[in-house]
Amino acid sequence: MRLLSILTPAETELILENRTASFKDLMKLTFMDLLLKKVIKIVEVEKQSHPRNDSRVYTYIEKGKNFANCKPNPHESIYTTPFEEEDDIQILFHHFVKIGYEATGKSIGYKKKVKKTGNLDAFLKSSFFLNLFGMIRLNKQGEKTKKEISNYLKEVDSKINHLLENDKEKALEILLTIGGNIFLLKNLNFELLKNIDKQLLAQKRSESNSESDDYGYWNLHMDFYEHNDLFSDDFDNGTSFQSYLDDTLDSFDTQFDASGCSVFDSGCSSCSGCGGCGGCS
Image (cartoon, rainbow, N blue to C red):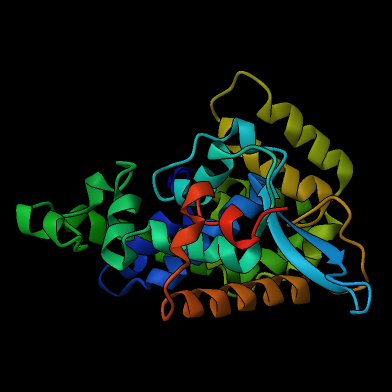
């Protein structure tokens, strides 16, 4: 379904859930998609705050290898702007989530940012009242598209693991086409992605670098499958890939919920919410 190669997962979620789309889910989907495209990445650093104290592992967010190649959409820029304003920084994970939360204008503001790409215009009703309050209402075309997307994702969900084991080329083509919308799949076993053949990936890379428009949208997502991981090129700590992914999603949920019931330190404004409070290193 070519439309899913254009839509970010947050945009797709707005079509599928529209009135009930969760603020946290939209933010999380955008965060995970940027990790998938290696626009940002997670790094873990072991530090000892004092010689007498035990060392601790701190989780940071920093620029990914594809940061310079990404032209962020308005709803993605909440996560990329801190790195544009201050180069070569690391931001503590929990500070990073808070920065994004504070930059959204909360649920209504973030839904407006998601709509700003223009990709959803053909599917949404438009009026002064709806636009003012950031309300999402599908028009007739939108309802039709919602059904088509929902049916397609259900079909992919039902067969993707089988394809990854028995028809890797078809599986890879589907996964590359839907891009970050893989996070809307409920049954995908991420561990199976490690089985994708390197020669097949090289072939798809060649196609994506061709002049054909049919493959241009694959570029930023290709690195994920080539390196068999979501966060770094050295994912090999004995933890299962699925567990690592689940832990990251759980950590995001925890930090997001904490952001909703606390006021971020205004003293951090000098470096986009990180430098003034020890978020950068």
